[in-house]
Length: 367
Image (tube, rainbow, N blue to C red; front, side, top):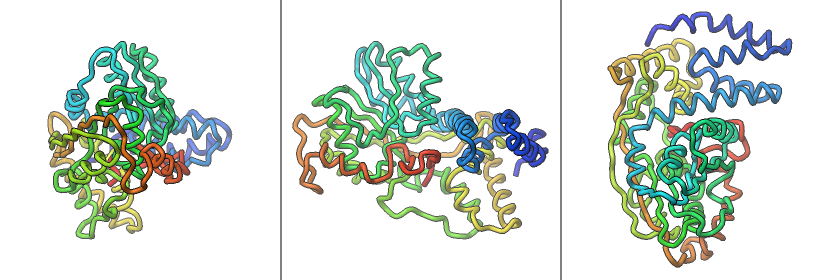
């Protein structure tokens, strides 16, 4: 495992002091600690969800900033592939589904200018961060909306292109959710997606899971559950999109490295906060937890290099065209737009944030 940096050595003392300051009404020490130590803001946002509203908001914004910096960099090498598949031209009206903190949305805005670009995400801290970030990005044609793309009532036929970058896997009910996207597109309008392929194509998950497991079984989600690999099967992708009202479905395998951090310490701070890592460490006694983290550190060191800590990964880049005449869903007997309204009770959203727990988010790599 990488040695602790000087900023981490006094972490427990700084946290104790910050909490004492918070108890007396001073927020700054806690926020400075969250800014200084990678990964701390996410943990604080969870632990202090019930803190005074101003503190909880500041922490959630710090968490959003960390999310922006880490996850956008993580999969950045896929971005040109998705932009190429979207085929944007000047004046296109574009919807970015699960826009997160808005980094890729800004790229869409530049590619489609002067056409309108709308990013939608259900997570309030990310929406706030995206709006803040885009104000200084020189893309006046971009608007950020807080909402669930699965059921949001956009005007029918109002977009030329809908794009989703590693978010569509989290739809609780994919057929009606994609049907709602088909409804928002003009007839023949384009859909472009990036979704993860199967576990065996993604070294990052196998390596992290096996390191933390130490011989224990790595937990798996039931097939079809919303999560990083819900659309990992090509046949499933084709069937879902066809039923939702799309034609000309193309599904192509692409492979790019994911970058967990610029160095081992940064990668360790990020990986140790993933949902998978928390699940694997849960319930372990102190020696077992330390051994698991040591194994994780060794794996990250082995994957470190001049370009950062890289792991192999594989995704599908998907494209489709909205059908001119939307047919009723075979599973519900209703037009897809009507079926989409049924998913309002699902509690799951395009980006993986539970509706009932808006202060928490499943990370984009939650398996």
